[in-house]
Image (cartoon, rainbow, N blue to C red; front, side, top):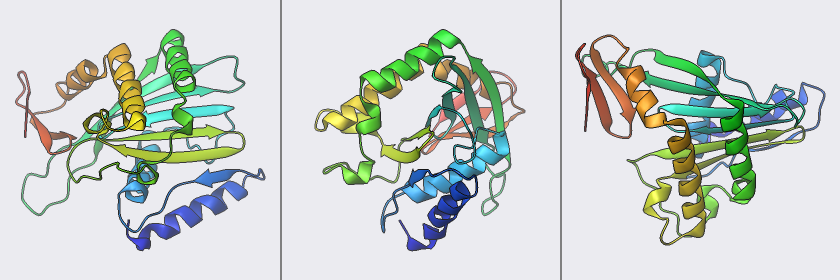
Length: 228
């Protein structure tokens, strides 16, 4: 990752100190890769969608799994009660070449307590917390296309931000990739994220929208189509 994003990490460390509580923050910074760029984009989503800011919240824990079109957020104030929300988001593709994409469009849904608890238990059972960021795993490929998954985990004393590019492509070679892939697929299946995201897209005005990677969705006012 380009070193120009280093101030983002430094600013985060100072932000935590301002809340009067000692907290370690782990956001990998590399000369190559996407981790800090993904962190910058995630901070923008947090502000735009009013998601929980892990650097400022007092939750006992916050677990958030995200990709390019959805986020699943599980939280607890005291480790006894647990709740969650899911976010679906996209941007309309610019109408003319060279124009920047338009504002973020999004929808927020609550997650049932049973689903929130099941996701958190899977996170703990499968030891997802102990898996390092992709660039610390020998043999994990870094690609330009495809889907990256972000996993944030916050407790009273620590916050970690990790990225994983296309875990399904490495699951047969790397046990860490298999664990991340299984975890993400279990969440997608339990919450029906693919179906819910498509339903969200079909509520938007006619246009072409990003769906992750190099794919887009064209909504004509009838049934939309996803294409590359």
